[in-house]
Amino acid sequence: MDELDRHILQLLKENARMTVKEIASRVALTSPAVSERIRRMENRGVIIGYTVRLNDEYDQSKINAIISTSVPIEDRAAFRVLLDTQEDIMRCFHVTGTHSYMIRVRCENIASLEHLLGQLQTVGQTNTQIILSDMPVAGPRF
Image (cartoon, rainbow, N blue to C red; front, side, top):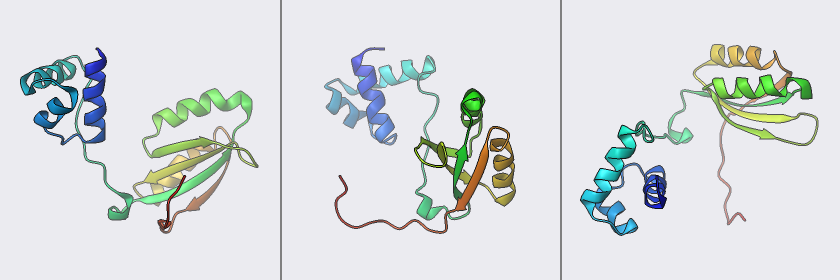
């Protein structure tokens, strides 16, 4: 994979619906050349699919929560494995303060949140806040 392939991948990551013609104009190649590069990356398994990401605002059927957890140093390897195997975990932040990590989760329902909490409690104590709404903040953010 060369720099052009990486540039094409970056464009597709930003917008998987971008046309081959638009990609070609941005990377200074012909459309057939871009199509061939994309096809090769698909065949090699670099690109494994295309998807739609929903804005949380429009998908209110999920339970969104922040889980604060304290993980002893000796359990952090197991914690990392757990993070990588739980599809409901969206983000994890290593933080200062009372807890060592804050985890952003999106679960199908309360039962799946409860199951995830049980998994996390095998490696540390948890404290959970369910997100009721997400309020945008006006003005520029630096």
